[in-house]
Length: 173
Image (cartoon, rainbow, N blue to C red; front, side):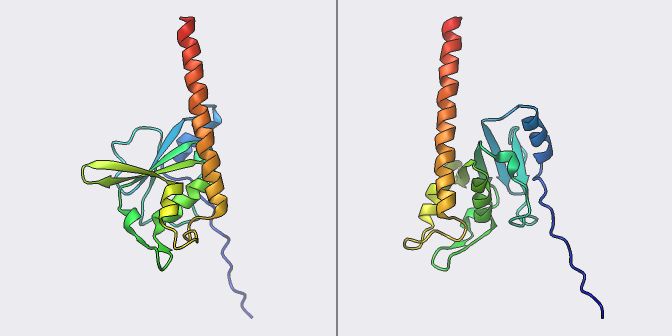
């Protein structure tokens, strides 16, 4: 009898530019905001940034710990936001990515082009807009909603602390 070969689960890997950013964070350099580019064009986005190629992205196979506890601006350069069917509760990979980032306790804001301008919507508002009746979309949950709210509060608190420190430094001069 021949036994079936069982493949071990794939180990999550860091996103593009993730190794350098993780090293910086381990050295105590914690950015206030990280930009994640969803698309094939990553140029023109300043550091710290991470990149995700839509055709190569498989939900659940990227290690997102590098975004834990910071604001993440998710740039949609591949029109991933347009891949949805609310009534059928079917959403593209972009939405799975939003959920994965929020699961890391990051405050997630989605940015998408609208003509010549970029529009911004936080993940909680996006999830609420994708509700069918009272049910969350497949990529969101009560837990993610609570995490997003806490992450937003922590982000605002951090901004307040930074502003108070800056005021104190300015008064000392």
